[in-house]
Image (cartoon, rainbow over all chains, first blue to last red; front, side, top):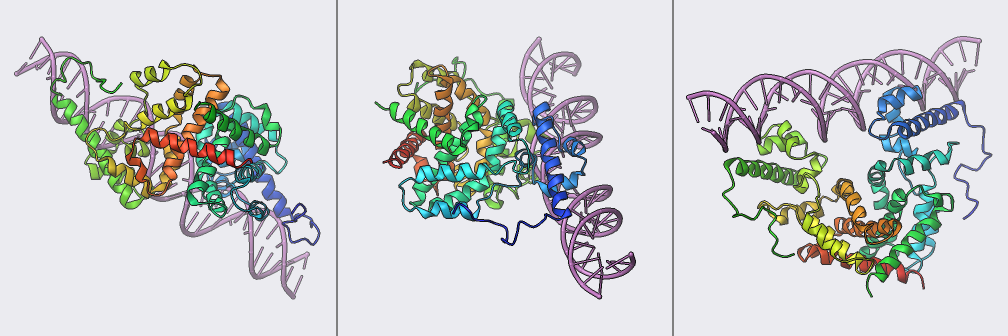
Length: 207
Length: 207
DNA sequence: ACTAATTACTGCAGGAAGTGCAAACTTTCT
DNA sequence: AGAAAGTTTGCACTTCCTGCAGTAATTAGT
């Protein structure tokens, strides 16, 4: 499952002018959003401001991103690729369920800022402007549903619900952690570590 | 902590006409919001519609509640009472931290729909209209900060962060659970149970 | 190279959430 | 009754976001 090419195989093909321009404007918007939010905070970085910074019309902005947060994240929405879904469903039952969920979610989150945008920039914004966390969580809600659907193929609905909640909580904790040097290591690892620490805290709280 | 009266003690005193009217309009708005959201879903229940259902102006609506969700919940915001804070800080250290957090959060959530509104109504809306969950979580974000601040008095910032994240995840799971008969029992108990189950899932996922 | 079909960009009109301000109205106090 | 204090309302305004229709740019066909 390592070398699956999503494009129709026959040579990477020169990306057309159109394609290049699309990437260009999307990147422009994304970078402008990142820059302005970093400088002024989410509240005081209006979509209009981002648009003029990026040199596009407001309408174009919403052609690329459905919301302000999504522009900051650099993704119209979180999506599960076929490869990711297959990898997750390869194993069955509850064994490694939580670990696999971490891998899945980590992989999905890693899709942010692909097209040549400095990943450090997005990390900075997330850690410096924590007010954005609730919006991001809300933004990820749609994804959550999809993941629960997948998890339900490996355990009961009830436990699937809780397992996913737990992993999403790990994401949440990532957004609230101060500064976050750990964001550099594999996000998946980081998530799993968070889950394990939570588990430990819960257990210790009992004796 | 069972029989603590929040009012200044000296006789319950006849609530003035003004006070009664305020409660009346707040209740009217809350009930209208509940009713319309239950019928049409969050998306299709506009604030304007809620206002005319409740017989108040739009402006008055926002005098009572800062947002649509807050009107559904029936609270301008989640608040920690002094009694609750004191009860939480009575114990020290990590022992029972998670349990105490569940009690704290459970108590806070229990403040919804006090003034004679059928609690069943709000439960119904939450379980029938799950799309509202992300908004509620976002609504509770402010509270989250306050709770973390409290938790930090009993453990390290890092572990406080994670412990609170875990308990908030339990709330999240409550919002996503199908139908939820358990909402009837003490919410606190329910939260703790969710945490424990998550802990179990995480642990089992390892062996 | 010129035309035709796609596809992207833009403006405009408008809906919905939410805020500040000042006028109008109600309850309360003296 | 009249002043003081508090509540409700209308109005103008900002921001996010969507549908629609027209324009402009890219690409494909000849």
